[in-house]
Length: 175
Image (cartoon, rainbow, N blue to C red; front, top):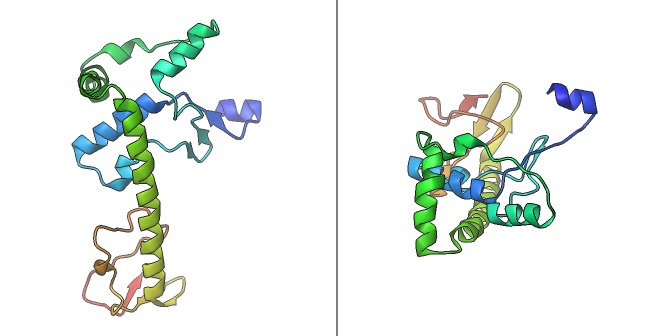
């Protein structure tokens, strides 16, 4: 990030918007994603911020026209060989013909799914922490009487600690 070092900026703002969110959700849904994939693009990820993520492409273009602001549209957005562009140029217009507020509806769904994901992560983390009998830098000993598998539909895909809960040695698992 040479640009970041030159300017001294601690954040980088990018132009992702709600239409990008809808495209991402649909791409991930078609690929068979879980909650993580269905929550789209986060507004903040590390040093990257997306201040326009709640605005539709139409709203942004309308604002630019109203205030005589120049803007650029990537010419490759119209090429249909890319999966995202097929969704953007074919699937979304078809969905909008059925539901004119489709992009806003997808945005609402993403917000609800993100709330669900955050709740599930919290519940799973609490259950997991309740299973820990002993933990150090080399070993993690779990109480399997308080089994995580009883939390249906939840997983630890984004856990900071990656452990294996399978294998023959059920008393402890190396970190």
